[in-house]
Amino acid sequence: MKMGLIMPQATNSKELLVLEGVKKHFPVTGGFFRRQLGTVRAVDGIDLTVSRSETLGLVGESGCGKTTLGRLILRLEEPSAGRIFFDGQNILELSREEMRLLRRRMQVIFQDPYSSLNPRQTAGRIIAEGLVIHRIGSAADRSRRVLQLMEEVGLRPETINRYPHEFSGGQRQRLGVARALALNPDLIICDEPVSALDVSIQAQVINLLQDLQERYGLTYIFVSHDLSVVRHISNRIAVMYLGRLVELADKENLYRDPLHPYTQKLLEAAPIPDPKRKRKRTLLDSDQTSALNPPPGCHFHPRCPHALPACRESAPAWREYTPRHWVRCFLHDQRQSNPEMLAVRVGAAEIRADGLE
Image (tube, rainbow, N blue to C red; front, side):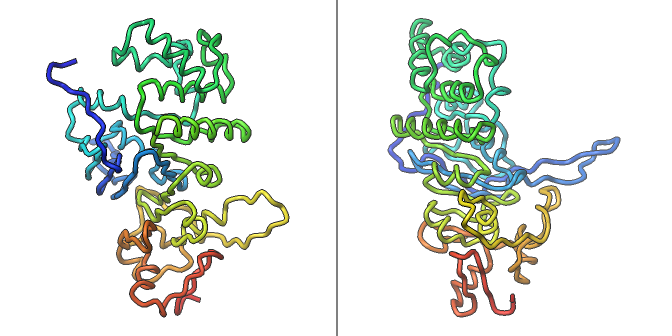
């Protein structure tokens, strides 16, 4: 470790993570001279706050930028614009060595528990890897820590010398959880950690994550496309569409009163575990637009059955419609300014506006 370099310490602030105007644009090049032909706006201006010991669910269709946002928070990708504060410190101002130290407090659990594990290393070496890299403890201390972590995630100590291919899918994901816990992090990015598992194993891993959060006060950002899983584990839910957040609310409010038409369509599409219950469903007009060529104005307007002329001309602002319930939609901007003009019955996922029907 360099002289004078101090490991960032935790503060008493309630907010652990703050994102301000975060963007990530990828240039698309082609031709003989590799000229820039366009730009993929993977993350296009995210403002977000995550409190300590909460679980924020991040949902949206494939390609909306969920995973890229997680990589930006971990600074595995450098943002094109914006600021990211972790425990009050702007991580974009940190040197490479300072960022390496800070990553002890920021870990990730990957989607595929097999491809994210080194097939040439045993379970014990995989879990201890972070401890070795950061030179934490002696060899004996690390061995004790590994056995403790295996016990906490439900792996038998006698499997410490097995290789990843000798474990089941659920056991491999538990191995990934143990690796993420090894350095006692404050924040864990869970990038679709149960999507590759059977339903019964999903429940076990979700319960494990909740138990660990209660025991250690962990903060999760839970990235998923499974609305039922997100509803079970999250305190708040953020809905993302083509690089932008379109709605953010406590999970009870979001599932009871979804404000954005896109959120309503997501909830309509979620399966109901009761064949006797019927749900009215309406199809979207088109497929999701590419982030390479997003439409002007509100990105969702080509698919929205309630689009207003303003939706095609400019992007709606990110507003707190009710306390702790944020939405990016002109329909609700107009309702706030003139409640009689717009009637919204969100419980039935239906919006009626003058001249729209």
